[in-house]
Image 1: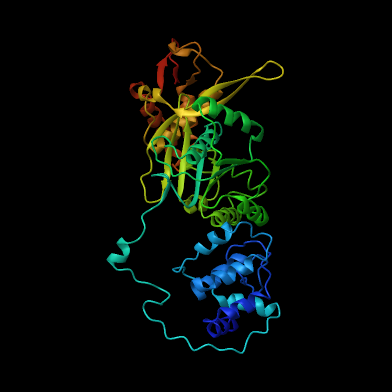
Image 2: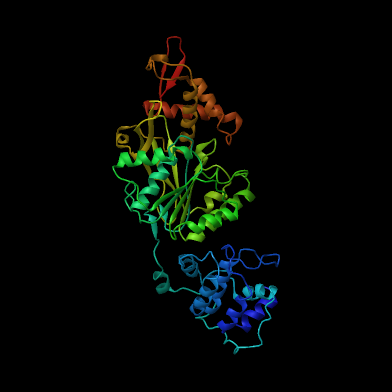
Amino acid sequence: MSALGQMLAAEYREDTSVLASALSYISSDVLRGNGTIIGADGQPETDYWFGCMLAARRTYGETAKEVMRNWSQQSLRYGDGSGFEHAWKQHDPNLAKPITVGSLFMLAKLNGWPGTSHRPPIAAPQTPDSARFRLLDRASIMAQLPMRWRVKGLLPETGIGAIYGPSGSGKSYLGIDLGINIARGCDWFGHRTTPCGVTYVILEGEAGLRNRVEAWEVHNGSLIPSSFKAMAQPFQLAEQGDVEDLGAILPPGGVVIIDTLNRAAPGLDENSSQDMGHILAGMKRLQESTGGLVIVVHHTGKDASKGMRGHSSLHAALDGAIEVERSATSRCWSAAKVKDGEDGKQVPFKLHVIDLGRDADGDIITSCAVGPDTGAIFRKPEPSGKSQKSALSAIRRLLGASSTFGQAGCDPQTRCIKVDDAIAGVAATLTTTASNKRSNEARRLVGDLTKGNKHLQSAIDGSGEAWLWQ
């Protein structure tokens, strides 16, 4: 804060009439903003409403609430007042670099406010109870509120999260199922949910939204709740106007699921720290505008074992993440990141194909609905090691592209590849291994995967060629 701002803050600290006088020179008919009034360049922001709220609350406390309400009601954006109440509660007294009323007074001064000659008594020196920083003893630590869960053990009540996986893994169906069950307040794969309003922003496959919802209703024998809403219009996380406009219509304290992150960030480079910073800032602004949870549906990169596509700052910023995986025979999800919780446990699920009738041409209409995969208990487990997982994924890609079937005694309808081709394919993925050691390491990994027919099967044909298949 500038010297002028500090002076004004100290001068008018006790008098809300001075606050009201300053506000009469400031329009409340602006966008919410992210809590800033004066930018780093010393110039006023154009979206400062929330910053004014925080500044007044920090300096004057509850005595300023009605003054700020009266000022806010002058804007057509005020609505039913729920947004005002929510913003007022977002004040954090322990914020490291809080905004103060000095910035508000500076804005008023720039708009022509003459100030006042009234000088209240000099404030008493800070005592330990009024100091900016607080030291917590054991009693204070134990009095802290416990973690509040939206999906117990997986996703917090407030923050940002992600559901991610490769194309075709079922992550969008899983996201819709998660959102509907949160809106219903029903358990999700054994995890308790706390009900709230849920908004599903579908930016990919919009035309299939109706079929997905109908498939869910048919499979579950229930209509989706009225607290589950969808939005299928273009939306960009890096466009502040889009974020403000969407945030204004979202239910306070709710969940918004954005499918997909790529479609919500057109033209931006997910691998760029700067562009990812803009994306994360948009997610955070949207989260702060509702005080709830923002979840993005996202893709993995070419190497699924490396997690989400894009800059590492995305994973670091998340409060919770669900990873979706798919093999040739199964699908599963796992908690890839849990704030103050346990991660890593894999949960198998299945996409049930639902018949929705026929279209105008008489063709069958189908969609899918998520459900537990009860047959998974009889299925061979996936490898536990990261290297084996990566090797198995590479081999599965080769098998998927193979045009050879039924070699070395395998089923005539089963795709197979030569063991040497599998070793070469795995070796090509071992980019962090010394080049002169890749073939031996790949041979070891393929051997581990075929040992005892645990993950892959192999045999030798009549000419001595070794083949493998799944």
